[in-house]
Image 1: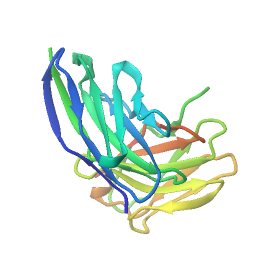
Image 2: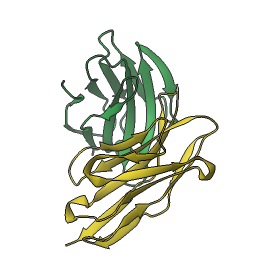
Image 3: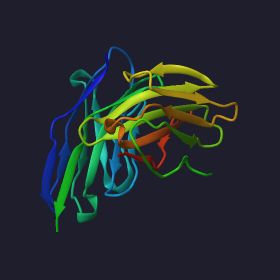
Length: 113
Length: 110
């Protein structure tokens, strides 16, 4: 069975600090990986995705994630966060040919101005 | 192109009633999945439809059902509502290489 583990439930940072949110997954096959963001009062939006190729994926708003196959990880990073990055972040994994995605429990990021 | 639309956006029902939620995927997308989002359980997969057929089903009771029409629009139905069914119900429209979430339907059961 597939599963996703997000290491931190709540992260608090000051503006300009660097961010890394951990995500590890368990799946017995080739995967597609996603990070979604949910800003307060808004719906889930895709930040970035990995399907194949370069394991370092760049997404919107300066976010990036690195797929490390040997570690079953897909950590999200941003060099310098802004107050507007305050949101909940979800990591998700999907089998390459599957329709079902499995989500982590989410990490709430609070950025202090 | 238009995004994923879900109707209604907000709904208040009482225990024991039933409810039907609707999702219109992005034009050309044939796969629609449904998720339930609650603070306690996070995002949980309900079911996935592709070309009018249910392809996957999550671990929800039989009170939760769905269907997909020939135009790819999908509905989910919850019968005999319980307080614990209060949640945000999200629809996901999936194409070959991308998937997009709808804004969700916020269901409150009183």
